[in-house]
Length: 367
Image 1 (tube, rainbow, N blue to C red):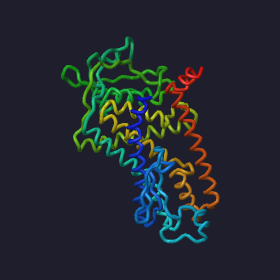
Image 2: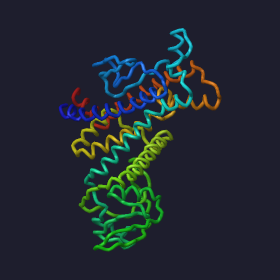
Image 3: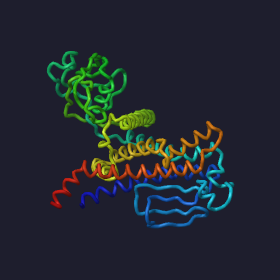
Image 4: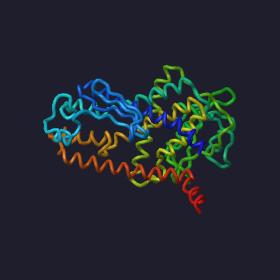
């Protein structure tokens, strides 16, 4: 229990920062668009503290896993209760362009934060397993191609390899096609072509599949992955792009049933991962925070009512039809989306308990 509470501290700080940055994006966009903000809250539930600004009430609430910005006049139901029409300062009175900017600003801020964190990590540097061969599997494509123990791979098909994990990801992404490996051997640069074989294993999502392998085992060697500032700006952008694409692919596989829902991680799992990242040092913790920021950005842009993406969907329909979607339909869809998100939250919490072995521990305790 004490260990969990210790792990909880970095998780709460990380989630607090991510939520604050996301909601700050909405808040600043509202200010830019001339929309008044009635409330800016970090967290849900009972308020721990609050204060009144010139036109906005700011609060920090008990449950840190969420937050919101409440623009004035954001729903027709609210305006109807006040028995009036949308007026200057209301969200619904803003132009379509400004409403789009307000809705997308939170997601944009998450991606900007992730990029800044990835740049910082790459400039700071962190120890990673070197892409150096420690052993070859007998009869493997690697052995047949002429690769040797001690070879250190620097490029795959001309793309820089930064770590052993990066090398494996590039091999997994080859779909079995021939790879050109650039490597250093006894101070000299060599190029070797190798064609992976498809074998039973785990893909990048941890699912059983036929995956490309060349038959190499890493050496017990590490390097400090560190970039000059100018290169870090580019490398961080590439890393974030690839991470976003991987997250989108994972979501698509989840929707199409190719990825088990058991792979989802909820708040309890995040607490455990954040604690582990904190123990590994500042660079790893910043990288983990950047990863979560990208995930939060991608999830929020999904076209589910109650999320930013759901509101963007209605805005897109409005732009095509040149007519606003029925307020009653929007309100009902948003309520349905909220219930869906709550059901998903319950599932991922239960999933965390199962994955962390807590359900089994409870059974033993109460038996």
